[in-house]
Length: 104
Image (cartoon, rainbow, N blue to C red):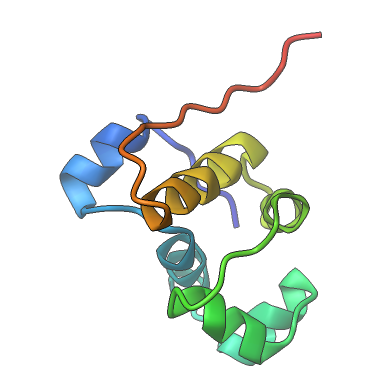
């Protein structure tokens, strides 16, 4: 499944509320109507780990976020941007993050 991003994070949050990494994964899973077990298998993680991400009890590391994006045929920079924003939110640091693909 590929989701085309028409606009940036600020527009997504304006229209749908704060996007967290857990919500991002859950939205991908629910759009394609996967069970947590099947979606976890696609991502290469345990269903419990996926549940922890979706319930926002844990966050993946950067490499995992990039891997999930690749497996879902989506933007690594978008997944990492959402992840970084979660880390900042957890630390109560009021900054916005924008991640862009490095040009060659």
